[in-house]
Amino acid sequence: MIRNIFHAQLAAAAAAHDSWVCVGLDPEIDRFPAHLRDRPDAILAFNRAIIDATADLVCAYKPQIAHYAAVGAEDQLLDTLRYIRERAPGVPVILDSKRGDIGSTAEKYAREAFERYGADAVTVNPYLGRDSVEPFLEYGDKGIVILCRTSNAGAREFQDLMVDGRKLYQVVAEKVAQEWNTRGNCLLVVGATYPEELADIRARTGGMTFLVPGVGAQGGDVRRAVQAGRTAADDGLVINSSRGILYAGHGDDFAAAARRATLELRDAINAARR
Image 1 (cartoon, rainbow, N blue to C red):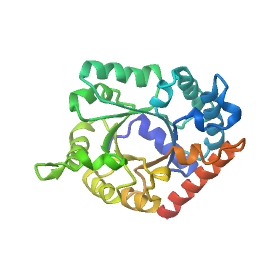
Image 2: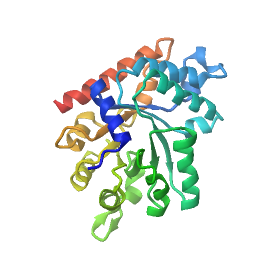
Image 3: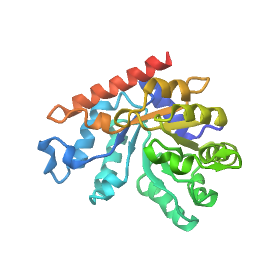
Image 4: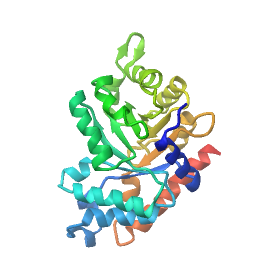
């Protein structure tokens, strides 16, 4: 498989930190420690503390853009990304925006992710078809993370619909692996909450890398996810936790609690691997 710059950066960070952990930077000001909530830069201050506490333990960070845009904090998102470059050089950033629109609009969303924010990868929705994803795919050195089997409870409503003898998520997995990944820059989102489907998608897609949400607050089992989803070469997974790490503590020691939670997740993943 072609290895682009994003995949190389991800592999290097995973090896350097012995980690498949991705920390989701999904700030909710009302859950911050009291001493941060009234600061005009509360989100940036919170994120900086989390990054300082976890920079040596992760293979990626994943800010969710809605948590910033909803409160007009896009500038703090930009500053957060700059801080990751400074504090955790070499750790890639996955911008979680789940974009999916017609080609001309998708082109603008791709520019937003890669040129405005400078992200290393972005999440996209394949529902509108190849032409809606192509503007992202053209960034051959970036990571294009395509929704396949999501971790939410309602995923079965559409993703399990039968299409020519296969479930829709299986069609998406095979389409991406066989047709869309010609530049070697595609990944798939596959939730830890569905380990049987995780194993099925691994069998259909070979060595593709999966972004795996759903551990922690959503209840996905780490051991089952690792055993179902890793490749024969013992790689291919980026396991995300957001709330379970960010809000592991609620007082002045919140960053120390986040570090402990990240270590626990990293250790649980590595125990399952070994």
